[in-house]
Length: 157
Image 1: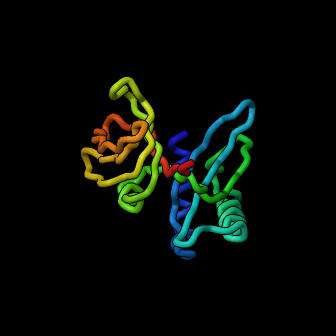
Image 2: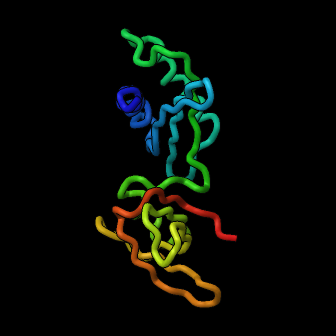
Image 3: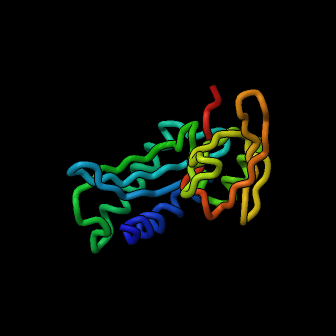
């Protein structure tokens, strides 16, 4: 499966570079009996449906004309924006998210909790600092990057 992701990424990057779009993520997953090739793209100011359609058409053409077929099984291709709750994966994602409200899931609990939400204060390769609210108090929480299972932008209610 990672081979599919790598191959698709290789086909995709020239298309995205030409349009000045950013690749957020490529995933190839089986849900039920169906396979899905999902491509998440973005750009400054956000991506629209016509831009997703353009990338979908161009990528589909490249994949269909490749020999041998890089994805021999049937699959659904979905090209979309990462949305308001965009995942934070690359270092640049974290840097761009400083000052933003984020959701973090941990591998190991801290103070009995594995999920935290708060404002990202700073980030280094080893840790990030979140400003969290516990009832009426604000507290800075230092999280080791190696303990972060997933992180994404979040909508604050």
